[in-house]
Image 1 (cartoon, rainbow, N blue to C red):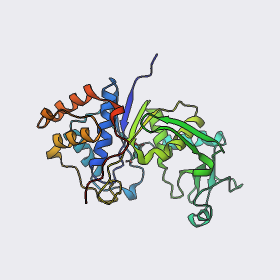
Image 2: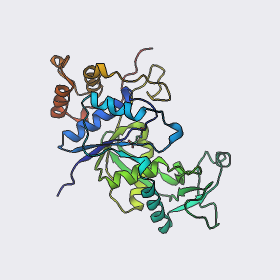
Image 3: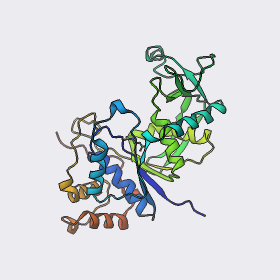
Length: 293
Ligand code: GLU
């Protein structure tokens, strides 16, 4: 029996939706719908200091205006802290995590990489001022990305023991993303290639939790004219909902799907329907052209 397709789009509400995030939303939506799959939305509101007031509403309004309608209820990570703690306790029982108080300056000597348990003290989980790290092993983690091919990462050497609960008491993205993807039975993840380097850490957590990792597709990123990834930090402009069909058409082109010329001027619904019927992941280019400055 094949596993039902469940995909997701998981924006952090650090700013409004920009063209780069629309591209990821559209690709994950089309990949799911073209395989009769479900498409869920998760708001990754884990880090209140980095969030922007009103960003969640604005992201959700933009998605709707572009016809990207989701299934089920929206998941908010801010409401799942108990579950994240429960999984940390499970990992502690497996002796897979350890407490740490190392500072950034201390780790700088080792290029920021933490290797090995640094404390023998008995520490409660959670305890203010203590981070909790996943103990990595000297393994070469390998996985296949449908767009980028075979990927390898020597976890202990290249990444080191990574943080799951921060010193300031906030849960780390790496933990929350895996717990949620497991709990919501996500089968496929289509997202930007800036997260490719996080994937081995996430697969490692799946393995520790005895779960089967998902299928990954990492998309090329839209760059600005300075060659930086479009992002909220780089003040990428908010996507205009009044231009929703044009935005969808533009993203279909960027994704190498070659929308028909007569679809210019079509509605979002028509464009998305065409996109679902003609979706081919293999047509996505390896990189996107950088706009002229
Ligand atoms: N919340 C992350 C972001 O906005 C995406 C996480 C993911 O897709 O795994 O970049």
